[in-house]
Length: 116
Image (cartoon, rainbow, N blue to C red; front, side, top):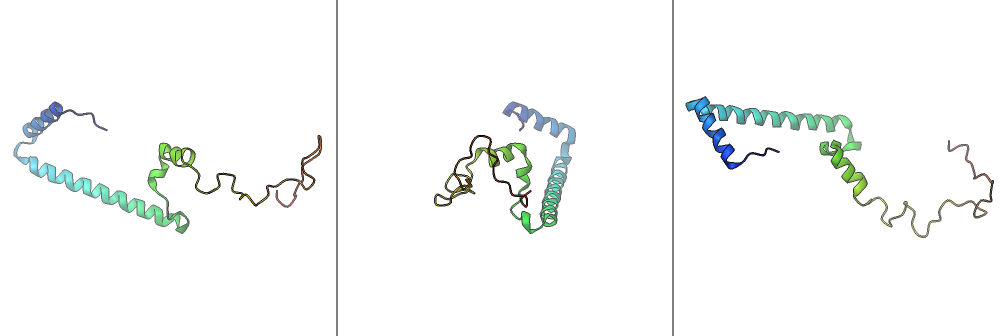
């Protein structure tokens, strides 16, 4: 995230000593308390969001909203929902094929008016 080398870090420490002087421990303590409060606020917001979504989203993770994570999870990983690697049909379960086999040229496929 930050590309700070050893020399640059030493310059920052010396600069902090010059600017804050003997109050540096107090400033560092305040910064630590502020970071702790931000972390507590973030955890509280995450818990409120999960509580508001309800039990259907109990496995919801905020990190899944990151586009890179979403793509990696849903497109690049193997699909565990279908253990046989097909479209959810087991080997002994027939696919939806018309009763007469293949359709002839120009023949319309079966239509279920209740399904649409």
